[in-house]
Image (cartoon, rainbow, N blue to C red):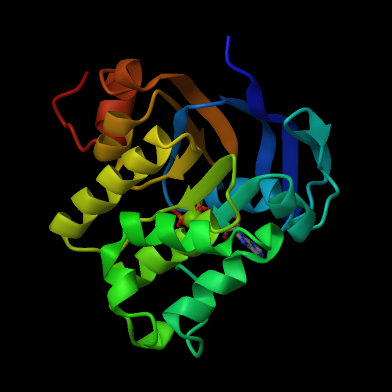
Length: 240
Ligand SMILES: Nc1ncnc2c1ncn2[C@@H]1O[C@H](COP(=O)(O)OP(=O)(O)OP(=O)(O)O)[C@@H](O)[C@H]1O
Ligand SMILES: [Mg+2]
């Protein structure tokens, strides 16, 4: 049995009157790609933000490698091995590609050279653009930079929030294949995606969030055949 890296237990998050997550529980084992799918506003980003310490849950617990990190600051969670690539990338527009990558390495001082080599091997484009300002990169290049920056902290678990959003189909396929490669290198991945079909294609297990609560979970291959998933998330109108 693989080690459970991440465990979320009965998590509730509120934004004022909005109850964004209701009793959400899920777990991620070492080596997995787990995907979270759900409609706009279902609470997917909120769940990743809670795991990263960016929003405070009103109740419930988050365990990272067995340690209760529910009230930890974001930088402590990164230092414990969980990095987050947020929706919309959030790279530093005025810093160069190299500086953006270096910012990701603060938790791993002394291992920057190895981190840069890994990022360049996955994303050769970044090496060619080291001195270019982050804000002048194309959308796809910015996504590569955001992922590369998160990897500089050598996370055990990488949280990816809609990495394919807004990219052309060829680039979407490329991003999915890179996520697979990152996982094959030993990094566990939690992948939030609107591209449910492709996400289920690379994940071992999946969870479906509906208006803040978990609706369906199981093996990704089973969910890809589930009529409810096919109808609601895979655009299959013939599914009963
Ligand atoms: N900072 C905030 N303040 C108030 N409400 C918020 C805030 N952030 C998110 N919400 C609300 O919480 C709910 C869940 O939002 P969240 O961003 O987690 O959804 P999502 O599943 O990531 O959606 P999308 O697919 O559109 O990215 C939504 O109703 C949203 O309007
Ligand atoms: Mg979101």
